[in-house]
Length: 284
Picture 1 (cartoon, rainbow, N blue to C red):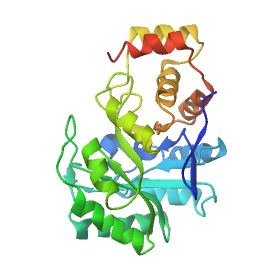
Picture 2 (spheres, rainbow, N blue to C red; picture 1 turned 120 degrees about the horizontal axis):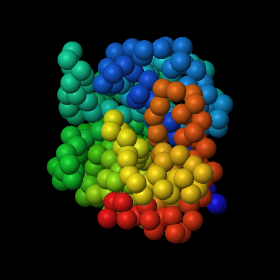
Picture 3 (cartoon, rainbow, N blue to C red; picture 1 turned 30 degrees about the vertical axis):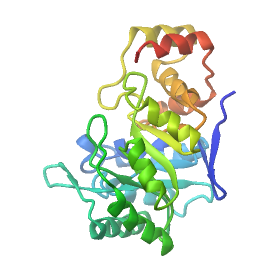
Picture 4 (cartoon, rainbow, N blue to C red; picture 1 turned 180 degrees about the horizontal axis):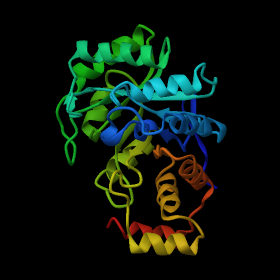
């Protein structure tokens, strides 16, 4: 059976099935949720179902999602780990604006602390100016700014989002990297090498948009495998990611308690070898 937890450091063990809170904001990850009570219920249900890490950011909303998390779950359970991201701001038109200067990053860390009601953040991911296929631009200045806050005791662990192997290596010369969060799923497999690199380095690889994002994964092969295994296509897609490598973790998002329960149940689904072979052909 696939291990359900992963230990990334002596003081950091998380469930490989996480919860991505992005969808709790309004359309386009902007503004308040359509149903605030339902958003609160989803967060509380995630913890009740045993999820021990939630992915968030102050630029979801902006501030909306972090404030919902605080309202729903503070004071936080001792085993719950919040993973947040910095590196962008939102425009009044809901645009995503890169914000990677050291002073901007430090301000964002303090804003995340404030809106989550924390004195120290468990994990902070540096969100790069991601492009299709990644970029080889240096991230040293930005990552160093976060490492300085780690040394000050405001951050426990550091991660990266939207990066290449070259950028991960560069960051590792500055401070330990415990997680990488890149676009990856059954169909979008450009980062196969990054997944393998992270496994070799015992870095958690978190797939964002594990189910395809705003355009859900659709595949006749996926549907056939799901039917054969008496599971939903979404559950099969998540199980495939969890079996992809020993350090793969998933952070599917939903604003529905029912869908949350389906997603969490995917951690119990073990795909046989023939199913994995069929699914691998989707992204080939």
